Image (cartoon, rainbow, N blue to C red; front, side, top):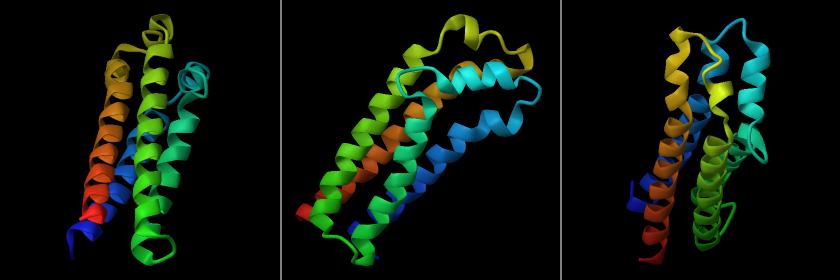
Length: 138
């Protein structure tokens, strides 16, 4: 496995991890559907845009190595996609109101760090995208 294949695989895995981190509250929090819906809908496009870009990122990262797209094109698309994902995650983070965030019970206090974790996984996607681009340029 060469560097380009490794970074492509790492990018796809990072996108999967981002999706998993994004849905953790849906899986673990029960009985508070209305605040949870408002939590995910916060921001200009809500968390749905982040999830869409993460799903799209899986396809983009794997298409360069499967031969369905030119690796240089995939490198450019993955960079733009990862930057857009991070931008949406940061906008979502700043759009979640404190009243909404602290409306959950004390056992869900970890939720205040959830958007930060989504941003962190987005940074991993960006790092993989940068590594893939560097490997393609070589």
